[in-house]
Length: 353
Length: 169
Image (cartoon, rainbow over all chains, first blue to last red; front, side):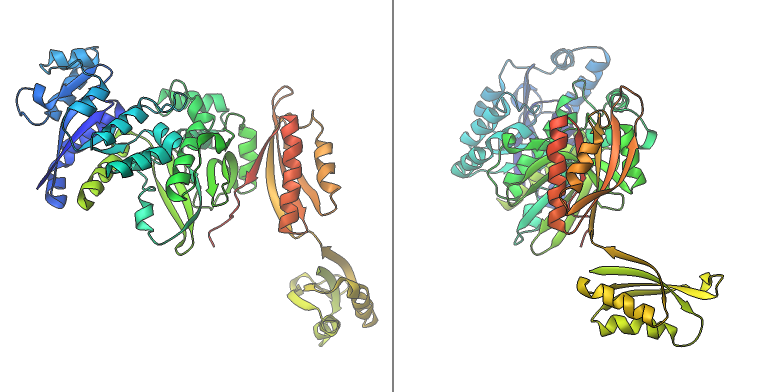
């Protein structure tokens, strides 16, 4: 049995999803892979919870207790820190970089929000610091990978550690790991639907003949679109993911500014109707090929095409030299979905090392 | 060149062979023959539609030989524009002169706008148009789409093109 100590940096939807999955799957992962996943640090802007400070188990955080405290505290209208402290969990005044450096652990799960404008911070510093301290990294944060792919890969190589980033693209849909699954193949091009929010909006507009603003508001009401939906509907999020795929799967040296980006804000129900009458749907497609074409734009997709997936689903079509075309489809968003990708990365790292 | 001809044959033995013979004599390659026995005309003749490939220079001679054999040629269609694509335009299309867009494609000589559906929801709102463009070949079609993209960009009209691979091979 190998003990794997994890820190979780960023305790929002994804960080909590990871904790929840560890709670649910721990015994199974022990049995199947011989890995004992123990969360030893959780850190967010409100402070840090450490294994050594929960007073009971000594070498790991009681994740049940943390999740319950947060849930109950939220119901009482408390902040995360208040929730934890009210339920007897000690919160340290430690910053994320300090925890990454000082607390002994094997893998840092970086789950802070993506920020493309601010040079991918704080995610980029978290990852570099963790590698420097000799820890593996698993992240759902797109910013650092999209902006500093080469730099991070080199840092990992120097430190002889691994970076898992399956969760950055397509949520639960496996795509980064297709590198291993398709080993020996050259991936020639990728076309995909990489943003569930846009796909939901276009699906609803088409089904119900709704104007864009209306479908967007509906998506916000049911929690599919964020309060500030710009990154999604302007195609920025898709472009960021496309850059990661370009670098990781096609071996390009691409960055966000190389992508030609058109979002879905100009699409009208009339246009969707005309498409429908001619046997097409409109989808926001990210596209990359070996010649360095990097484009995000609404495209006409034949109704019978495998990329015609509806709702919040993501899908990607990869062209390869040996295997021909491969299509993957899956859930692109959600805490448990992202956690599925993160846990997969963690298991892969420690199974192979 | 791909040619489609509609002819009418008398309902007696040997007529179809007689009609097809000149095509093979002139090196044509028959692609399909539709024999519409169920649509017999009031004159008692049977409509037949033949599609074939033949050199352009031999078409006139071929039609003459068919007529010499007493075969009625009702219609001759030559299909010059083989490739087609649908594109959508979204924006103030009519106000910004849709004719200019069509002309720009048509005057290339290798591509034409063959169909246009227009939807104008309200006077101040953006219209949507579906254009079918045909061209003599794939490269020419791509060129025509690029011309269209250039003009629409200047006019602030969004163009939505089909994804490149239509189906999995």
